[in-house]
Image (cartoon, rainbow, N blue to C red; front, side, top):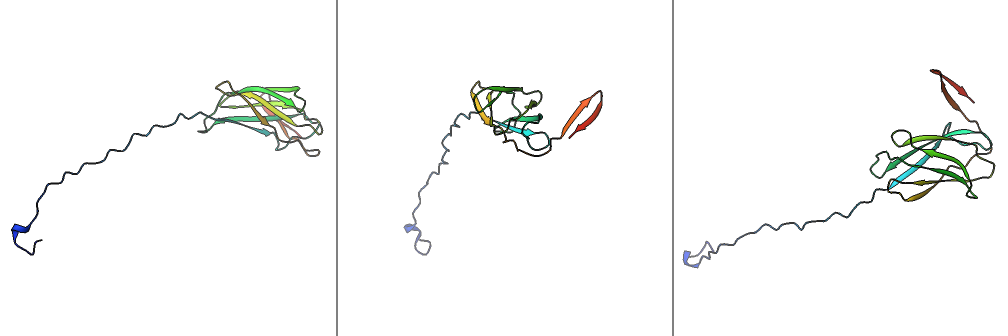
Length: 140
């Protein structure tokens, strides 16, 4: 249009409005707590008492307080557990041959949860650390 007479130029103001993004509502996030078990020495060995530690964390990785019981495959209670510090704790357990164990516990919302414990091996070594009178002793 600039190559022709100015009478042929077109002028109009065009307002430009910036679009506002729609407000996004975040869905309510229900925290999920997971419970993991760690046998001292690496494995549970059948018919040998061992210490089994556990850690409870939520989906953000924060420690959570939990408590519960460990049941055998018949639903009989064989041990109890509760967090002691930062979502962690430990319990003694003597796994029987051919037995499987399930932890029944309550999360911070009061919901009952179930977690399978590692399967005990038929042979192996159990390493235990004992902190008594300020000294550490090891039992194999």
